Length: 271
Image (tube, rainbow, N blue to C red):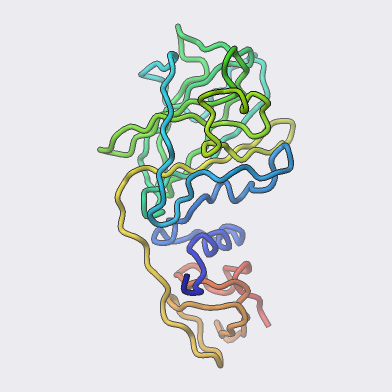
């Protein structure tokens, strides 16, 4: 480590400030999981998924199982009118090997209903979607039920354009059957919390898609302070001027267009 902040730190600060981060810095690890970290139902943070850390391992595959059906409808909500179950929202990002987001990735989800049964004649609790420009996805569904021999889980297939398919499963922390399910893999644990009578889960996928890493740190500003400039690496305590006002740096980062001090209160404090 060279002492410079990670792109993960910078983007998390930008998201907290409600600032749209530039695409060059969207390649950061475990954003969705980080947002929910430490807030699992058991009060303990699960073991991290393979972290997207500029060349780390991709998300591990798992078996398809006997209940996959092709040609699912395109939709982001699997909720069925009148169907029982606890509402579940799963969100996250899909990255390539250099921690940069992947757009246009197919995600095909399927799962059991609240009673642990799969719909093998129709497409209840089955659906596919594609990631947007920022690599994000959101699925609205229910917490799947249990059936003999398995812990609670979601199935998903992912495919970036022109790349191989990744088939895997996602798991819930704190499930008693996690200890007895032979397929359970702690690297595939979602981060889950209770929210508004339902549950919110997060997971970030890393696909085996080669990428060029994003930009590294830029020049360091002079210690006496300077006019804010994009491409400059700022450290906590650095001072700049922008629009005739003085600002102090709160978090180390490399400045990008759109992260001007008035627009990024998570990064800069006036005065």
